[in-house]
Length: 131
Image 1 (tube, rainbow, N blue to C red):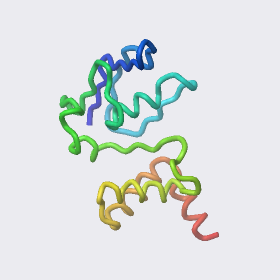
Image 2: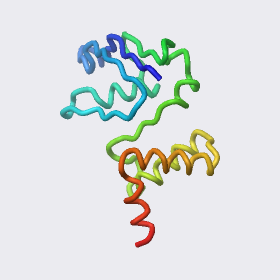
Image 3: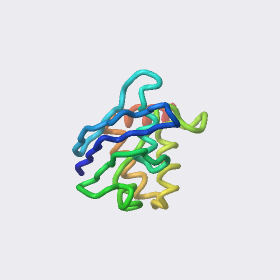
């Protein structure tokens, strides 16, 4: 998938939270880094549909994500820095998100294992389950 952020802006009244963010991503796993207040959460909330941009757009394979809806949402994964629920492991949080997407347990288990392995957390989970 090709993801293009084109001049994405977000204002809260006179405060500019995002000032024309533009970049492109291809398939892979990315981390969004920056100091507190840099706009990381705002950008992710726009990408996931939790917020609307003041202006600009995000394209997934050339299609505006606002128009793509669930077709786009099923193609991305988003793991926040801090879990929304205390005590949730990365694996448990991912199963929770999979259930919200109505993914069957077998498919979720396969996808979650693969993703955790890609980011180096799979062996950690196996070790913790044995303890």
